[in-house]
Length: 500
Image 1 (tube, helix red, strand yellow):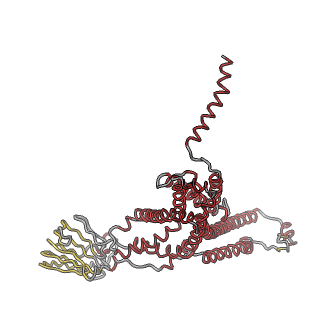
Image 2: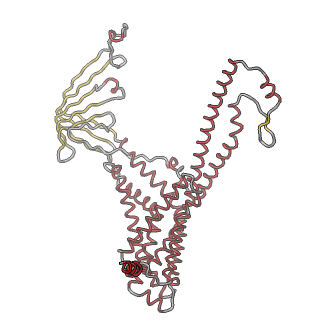
Image 3: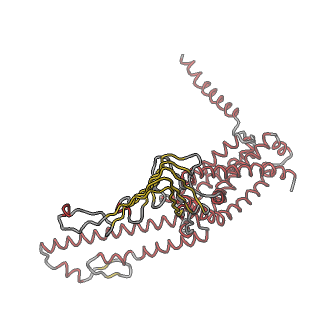
């Protein structure tokens, strides 16, 4: 390896690592902000959050690689141009394309790594990350009781406190409604009032202890079926005798309750429930699923004509050319006289058959369209395994010549240009996917639309860099504007003088 290649590679790897770290961090913050409401008040440990951020960091790598490749290559050649090192390279007889050769090899290696990552690591990370996120979202919030408001998330209890003390355990003025499985039919049958109390957890937060002081407990015990009594006068019948109720009142100095908090813990869902999604599959799985959908589509389409025979009230003979041929039975049927009542019956049956046939055709058309969309969805994801990898190489073909043309290093102009092209890449990818799902483009055309457009742009920038173009110099455009102004003045200014 020559010293020139080492110089260019050293100027590339620093910005690349920094850019990758920053982009992954930004995407993680985006996810954190988007799901912040689902994370608050959940009794989760650092291990759960650490695993979640680790999985989503892996998920963001395929998105961060093209942007890091674009920005770092642009900064590398921008720094070389800003400090006239690129000019010295050219004066030594080394072309810009030759100077890009070591980074081109690196870009090819990163593209290969990106393809492997998209095919093997990303499906695993998506499955682990989104299943864990679902479990966190469905986990109940921890016990958070507010003053003066009934708390109903603890199964079997409604709790209200007048004042919470500074230690977060002691409370004043407690009201507790305790329910059993049948209490919702009969109303509140057990009420506990206490002047003060404590609430705390034991056994590694698996049980909740409620200690009450100086209170009264009211119980209502109903004999019989336990349902509310309805007066026979209201129902107009003799009715059954009302059940007898027994009220008890107990005064206590100290009363202790222990309840399980198992419903508040995070429960892991079977990951097999998430494997149907295309983001959770590699190329082999995507091919298998797409082939299965296409087979189902072909079988349904093949059985359309045989299954439609049930909606017709006559027989027909199908020829070898698959056209309907009439026989003598039709001629004899048409020769028979038809009465008005028979005509009405025939028209009614024909209308009913036509309506059934229309419904049959519409349901099958919707089913076939849904199958086509599902197959396109899996094929589109399969193509994106390749396009995401190739986009790293395409971003290099844009970033390296742009850096040689702009001749600006640092995080100023390179960041602005990189963000603009990354947004363009993102918009083209989403627009291509939208047109594919709407049936306006085939899957390969829509999937490769973004890379094709940006590859043409990269080829143009490479050509401009080889000719040492001043494409982004402000004085070049100022001189062109002056020439245009002088042209119009020389043409239209003289004609005005002659006319005057």
